[in-house]
Length: 155
Image 1 (spheres, rainbow, N blue to C red):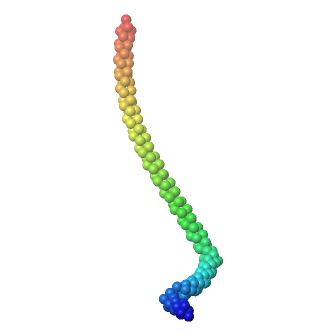
Image 2: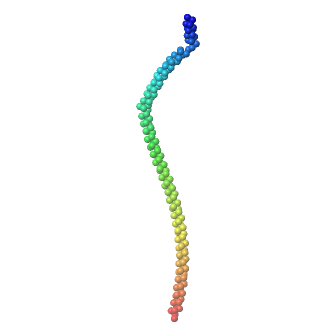
Image 3: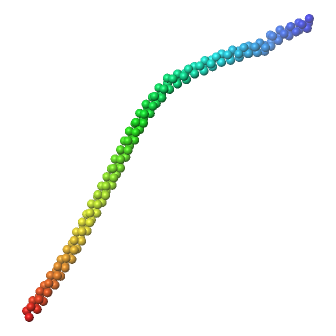
């Protein structure tokens, strides 16, 4: 009997002081409840995500695709217009450059022509001078020949 009392006192003492078995049971219950609720929450969250994805695919994606296509077409049109304007500006600059190059060539040709005319004028003066000298020499020669002819004809 004493043994039984000691055993009962030991059981009472272990129940009063040692709470491990009770705590372990409570912990197991809490974990089970938590996992069930968590699984339920995760399932609801996954269902929400699935619904959002489906809605996005059905409604938002086609609308966004259409808007993107419109905006890209508009951007392409604007880029082509900008490219065309840039080409026109480049063409004008090239024409202006050619025009200035042409102007420079015209000016250079005018200067060359003026130099040519000056050279021709100088050469003409030289030829005229030589011609005048030659005419003078020939006149003198003919005059002498006339004198000689007059001398010879008087005989």
